[in-house]
Amino acid sequence: MEENKKCVDFNIDLAQDQNNEDKSFELIDYVSSVNIACGLHSGNPLSMKHAVEHCKFKSKVLGALIGFPEDIKDPSSLEQEEIEAIVLYQLGAISAFAKAYSLNIEHVRPHGLMYEYLDNYDFAINLLNSVKKFNKWFIVYAPLSENFKRAAIDAKMNFAQEFIVNDETSIENLKKMFEGEIRPDTIHFHCTKDNAKTLIENVREFAEPRPVNFNNVVSSGWVD
Image (cartoon, rainbow, N blue to C red; front, side):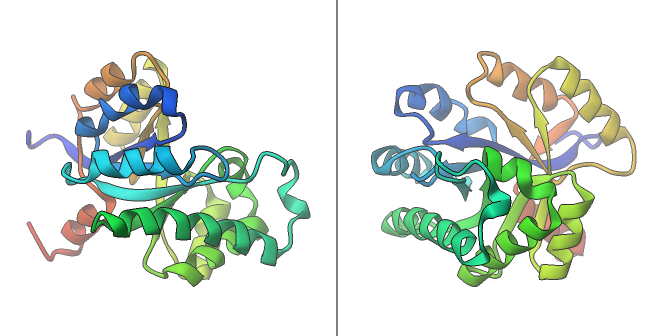
């Protein structure tokens, strides 16, 4: 690795659409972690199984891609009990597939409307506490949001602040962040983009993919 490159997690979503599996699977080798759809908001049992199988020998960190059922349009109307049930249902499903292949889930990435709503402190704290009930060591991936960051600290949950790359302009903005003191913990690339591989390669000119947990261990001083 070049000395001037910074290490940061690269992540993509898998198992959202069985018809798009070949395209998304081709990108696994270029990232450090994957988020596997859990069958409620997107994906289905077979696409989940295929995704886990493709990651079995790739040495990639696995995460749960969770979201709301399509009939939920207003998250603010949900009680904590409902949020907890939606979260636990999905984490249980993907964890079962991972266990069947002797793998583990290490993080959670909300998706769709759930992701957008993470800037709402009250919702974020409810979601974080729901994840914590399943596994207090999970890392929750979220956008660069002060409200979410405050909720994660209050919930005493690990979190990774994410930047989304979807075009050349976003790459330039990301590069400026890396030149400053503040940079994201993880970078998300959309598999649905025709130029997704090119975007990843362009970011690799100034950043190197490495999982969040490993980066945290390095920064703690335990390893060089």
